[in-house]
Length: 359
Image (cartoon, rainbow, N blue to C red; front, side, top):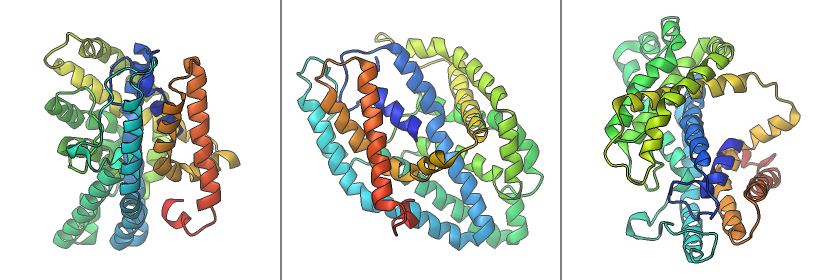
């Protein structure tokens, strides 16, 4: 979650316009590369972890517990925060547009208040898609169990030792359908949805990571996590190779004169980057030995996800006219956002009834 905040923090400094609330006058293409790499694994990692935990919930408490938990912890926060988030982001994007004439802000900020964006889901699109993917998983389990019984349903949905050889090669197995989806979209990386309209390719893309995490969960989940930890540096090296292979096509695609679509190999490299970087990131995180402070930050991560974006964008807009160096602006935006998220979690959520829903 800290990396998500950091990525949002550097978006105004990208060379490529991405429709953010504002743009800084000081921009560099290296930021574009860093954002591309981070986006390759951050949201996929969220879906992977969600699939892994969903499988564990199913094994421990059954289908009704899984469905109830997702409705309480995903559906309810999404429903409660959708309109306030939409109003806040619409106002902030309007403020960004209003400051386009100032020296440090370039043109190209989109208007979220038009007819197509009356409800802007913003960063809550992840909850929306996760709710849909989780609902699909619940439905699939129910259908398989109805057709073949509980034991055959467990085998069909990834239980037992049969899935272990497949999971050993999971990043490469996942990369194949990911490449097909990227090629179908004609993009080296999928855009973030901004409305309630379901985007099938984006949904399927992230459902693959959810399914991967689901298969990794269950009775052999600890073995899978140990394997990810052992192979972390191997996956990191593979992700680096994939990015190097992708780099020429990526540089051509952001050139103003570029038209058409990238070569097929570029889509394969981008898919491999996403799968290998996700496996590497999860494996490296598993090597951490969290102490009390890191556990507190982890406990606050879901709440931080829900509330961070309006705070961060407001700080970016407030700092836009100041002639500060980029590192100082980034530090203030990141530190201020994290401080507000953690302080509000401690005051409003921790050891309160809200923790049951967003803790």
